[in-house]
Length: 255
Image 1 (cartoon, one colour):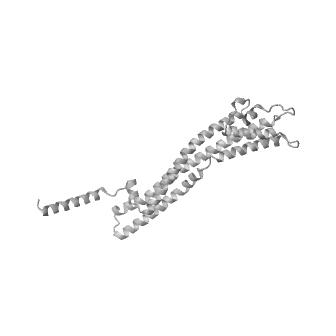
Image 2 (cartoon, one colour):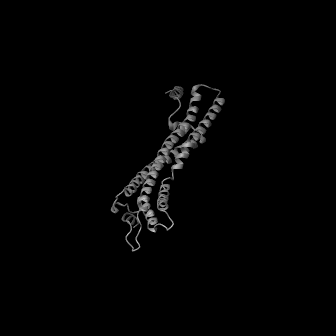
Image 3 (cartoon, helix red, strand yellow):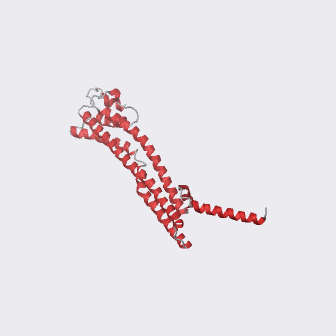
């Protein structure tokens, strides 16, 4: 083959490849937009994706924890039901057993001479409510991160968008070309940061609202059961002067 022909053929192939690349347009896929972003844009996207992953991990962990906690609250409600047998009293370190043990300790101390039955009932209920509050607080870690992500992520994405638009304008000024082919890639990269921010924020806000409402409902149900238990215990003497056994349900729960 003539060297001139070979050179011409190579030039033709290079021109065809360039034309094909131009015809195909810029890569506007998620990976392409991330790779073409500068270090600030990449940092924003990485932070938002990392926050989203952490939020989903918290949501899954809380879903499992709240399912278990809801079952324990049901056990407490069952133990507070009138006529509940001592054998049905929850044992171990779950919520129902700890609340009943706390109430039983106050109940066994009995009423003071100058203490009314209402004050005695309040003392028992206050102790059980304190135990419930302490156990419920253990389920709260992670929820503030969901709230923070839901509030901050859109603004972090907006920062990435503003930064990307500024870069696009600078590129337009340097190239002196305002065609859509020049403007579109930079604008797409900028808007991609906002999309990632919203994708991280929306599930976080929804999860935070649902989890906090569910936790509040479980706390209310548990406090209601504690009130019923305190009302029942305050009407019974904890022991006789001859050392008679205490009430079976509270005694079994305290063991």
